[in-house]
Every structure is written in structure tokens, then in C-alpha cells.
Length: 208
Image (cartoon, rainbow, N blue to C red; front, side):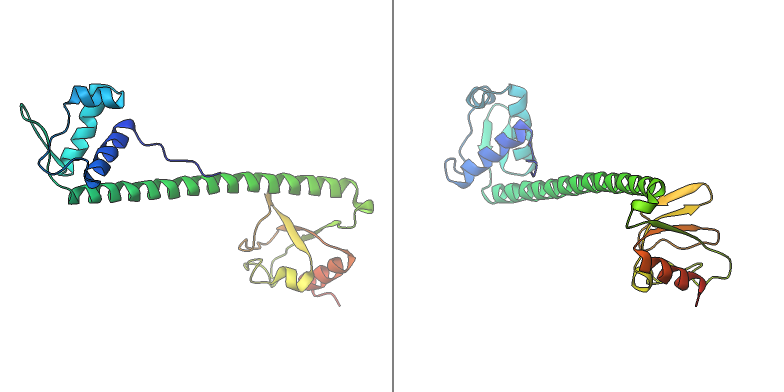
């Protein structure tokens, strides 16, 4: 579920006043209530009203003159002000969506790695009863796939097997993805049926 963007209260008040000016409730040259009256109207502190009026003043919507009060200066600038905050809301919403997607991606990757770990562990212990037994093949110097990626070798198309991990030195690379590159002395851990085993062996070692 998408999270709503929460604006500071002073921004909400500034936007509300700008909308009232746009709607004609307050005309150019007219005056707003004093800060204490506005604070009471919006049920906030005078400091919150001061910050709201400061935004409107910075945007050229009102003039604040000591002793003369708050005078409405421009209707056009109200529209610019409201559009500006709509853009900010959109950017914040997109940023939040990206953050949520990244969080979900991290969670999915953790789940995938966990399942692969379980699969490798299960398969190694119950290989005779598992129709998708993992195959382990070592890569040697001089083999055609050394230095090439999984995608470049069209691994699945050529073998029907799926690589779930690559053992490299003492490190186990889980779910390596299509751009992982084969290196000499790697051990490929792949799963597939009996046909895939023979296709994979022939693909790697050129067995007849």
C-alpha cells in the first residue's frame, strides 16, 4: 500500500491560505487576520503561523509590513506556489516508491538465497530421492566458457540445467545471475533432470 506524504503543519496552512486567495475568498490588497487570530483559527502556535506566512512572503504572495499587517500581493504566485508543492509531493512519492521497491528487492533476494541454500542442502543429503539432483562440475583452464558469462554461453538453452550457485575458492556465490562470469577452478552447482546432466557434461567437456 502506498504511503501518504505528510506535510508539516505550517506548509498545510500556507497552502490553505493560497487556495483561499485563488478561490477569491481573500482579494489582492486585502489583509489577512493577525497572527494570533490565525493561530486560533488553525489551532496552532503563533510560531507555526509565522513560518506559514514566511513561506507565502518568500513566494511573493503576501507582504508583511510591521505595523501594517499581512497584505495579499499576488494571485498568480499562489498558483506557482501550489504547483511547486505538487511537484515536491510527486518527487517525494516517487522516492518513497523506489525505497519500498528496493526494500522488497532485498527481501526477495534474501528469500531466494535462503531457498537455494535449503535446496542445495536438501539435494546433497537426499540426492537419490530428488528428481532435480544438483550437478557439480569443475571448470578448468582452457575450457571455452572460461571468461564468458552465463548469458553469453546460453547455458540454459544448451544444457536445460539451471545454475543455482558457483563455488569459487572458499566462497559460495548463490543465484549468480546471467552476467556472472565463469573462472578457472570454479565449481558449477546446477539442477536439472537426468537429460540435463548429460547435456551439461557434453557442453562443458565436449564428451561424445
